[in-house]
Length: 314
Image 1 (tube, rainbow, N blue to C red):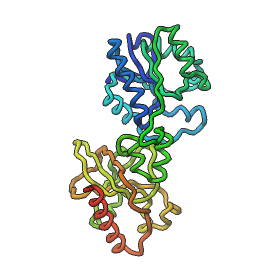
Image 2 (image 1 turned 135 degrees about the vertical axis):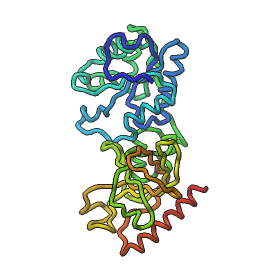
Image 3 (image 1 turned 45 degrees about the vertical axis):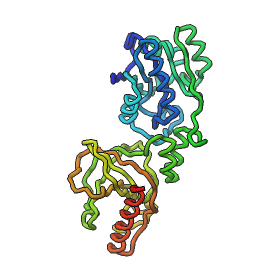
Image 4 (image 1 turned 180 degrees about the vertical axis):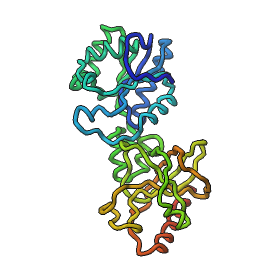
């Protein structure tokens, strides 16, 4: 997939594009992107996406939501949908000041050569979010492109949105979040060195360092699956928390400095340091808690592994 980071005249000769931030690339987003891919085939054009590296709310409202997907994950998911090129914009002060008409002319028409534009039902664009689907259609008549607006998508009678999925993850409802996302929610990061507490207990873990702006579920123990660099997947038990048994503080993180994400891969023995892995979180098992001694902790981890195996075998 071709990736561009700055709009400039004539960047793409002819394209059918999907517009949006597309955090999570959930089924609602997939409909919008799928329409762009379909239109590209009809028009003999390139299938593209115009998106942003960082969430626009970071500039417009002063605080961006934590993300379901990094830009790298989004680009990979776009490619899986059949997208051939992506324009990844930085949501700068300069871009933020463009009127809807200027944005369409400078970015979508002159740069991307858009002949078809697909958006979600609540898409807004341009300065102060002044542009909407109706204005985009009007500009399409002027600039010779067609506009397709996707309806709201429901899954199991549930409205699908990035905000809804974030709320489910923050309530540790990983099963419903996965259903609305169309795949398990996963954290991507590099395996870094830790204190090797898990190995000392007989349950070695991969300590995964994720992007600062990715949404991490609340502290607790989860059934998971870890994908390694070679593409292999391994069943796992994942602890997100502050390890209160080993240090002062409590399971809520009071008195602790850093949240850790530690995955124990079942029936695996190998060196993962330095690997970029994806940790999929399938189900919440229990809260993180402080144990009276290490034997009690070891017994609980063994129980967690047994429960996880049973869940994964179903």
